[in-house]
Length: 359
Length: 278
Image (cartoon, rainbow over all chains, first blue to last red; front, side, top):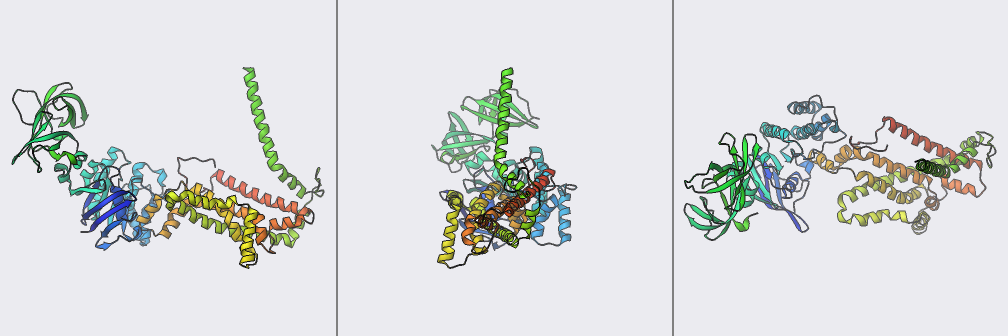
């Protein structure tokens, strides 16, 4: 693989920030490190950059062991959350900085800076100083500074966190396009699952310094490997219950008297305490009828939140003693607040995990 | 209503009086010497009989010129040493000291709490009597840079406290070596702090008598020469000397002030949103 981390740990006195991480990343891959704040994902990125030394383990970039190399000898580039543009340099000088450090010719520098200014629509701003730019423009300069360098790998530390939503979505598309254009790996740290989902080839979910799972984005979303991932990725409701029976077709789960069928059994034993997650978009709604239906619960619509093409129904399920949420396209039947409905889902919709491992 | 207005006026008047008295207290000696330096009747120059003779005499005197030059060399040397070391020390304190920072600060500040006379005597005992190094400008320079270092460190630390060290990291990941990082990014952003530390050190050691006195040997500097001259009675040239030095300092300050007011010289990078009194 093009970049590998082998047995990387980072400990500060009593705290373990990164714990025995192994990752291998291909030459043209876009990889996201997704995790909540304090999970160690930024430390991991800084270890790849050479800004932190791992306590144990090796970092290899393009087959070379760079563990003991300082950042400037690693041939990398980085985009920071706080942009960190050089305040005493113009946009042009900021963009040219990595190229000057590589001692490229004046012509080469000029043409690459012009290229970056072009694709990032920074033309006409080249002679401004960072404090004369808007947040979005500063972000584009920060990104451009990483792209012009043609690094072996571009490290991105929550580069879009300081931008508003609209700008962020625009930039997600752009960033992915540059990654394909340059044909180099991007390692993208974020706590925002939407960003990770929209851009990545693979996602590494990080929690408490460990990699919970490192897999294709659809795999991470559709088949969460751990309860933590099920909770952190996507939006879902969850219930605590007990396994009442296990068969080859799955498991029956008892949730405060309500029987549910789960077609994945995940090596469960009868009597085991479990947590069941159901993704909001997998919960369907229908008007109450007398016909019985498996995996259904009578609910009352407490509130409706409109999200453009989707409506989020906040449901009160007295039988479960809990709330659950159904996200439905607005092209479907429209329900109103206060209405008594029935929520149901297919047997393969829930993800089920032993309760002791639940977050 | 009239009473409260009277009260306000009285308070304001009192404040102005205190202000005026403070300035008189601070500047009266300087003004007196300034007038005396240009007066024939220098012991009681009221009214002054104006003359430029004293100033001319002073400039004609070889001893004064040598002293001035020596003082300047001493000041410059100490300032360079103090600034270099205090810069390194500040970097260490702010970046690497961690939880030990208080201990290091205490050590670095210690020279401020030692009487300068003691600093001078101990340095001369160590250098002159124990190590047998004859007193000269170099030994005085080294001794002066000890307490200049502490002052310079205080100034640098307050200035560099606001520096965002992550800019150094940004430079490094884009291929800058530690030296390039310092000269391309750090130095251009922190030089105002360095300059103020340098100027303060320069002035301190230029004016210093207590430390230099024991280490200079036979080398005259302005303060040591002035002190020596006092023993042979106060000469008018001393008035002229004091005045000329003061005038130079005031002119420099005035030029800096005007340049900064008009904005033709910006002291380093300053974020737009952040305003400052200068």
